[in-house]
Length: 213
Image (tube, rainbow, N blue to C red; front, side):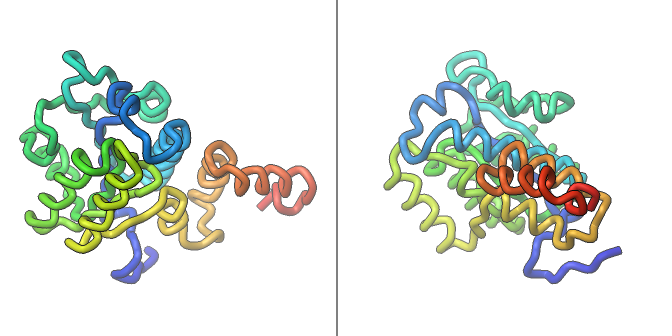
């Protein structure tokens, strides 16, 4: 079994929590391109699944106000039923905490809307409960750029670690010689990796040896 340095993410120690990627929450996002956030989050979910990392979905007042989680995300993990709750801070919901506890993972990777509330509040609470909290910044969004940026600064000062979705996936992969997940990673890159994904497609079409790797 591969050994991971403590400073790097080990997929066997991580769980991913997708928080409030719902229509009403997207309507209020002004910090980033909404479609980009959605695609990045889908890429994160598929990366987690490729490495056997548990994924937990949670919604806030799905039927009363915010609507169901975005279809692109539920399509990426149709086997997972979102945990609906009323609390802004998902960590104050007993069902969510129980789901996290059941994974037996201590490194929690968060992505969601809005950064300044539904991400900041649980991230800080998780730290207090002796979990490590990581926030995938490009799979989050806030009501304004200032709100998002200040929230990230506050969390980082408290000890939360920022990530991006592709960084997370590549940190799980670590070595292109890891053939168990190589093709899955390449497929995710082609689907959600933007220019990087186009480069992979180009290499596969132009360099026969690459497509056989």
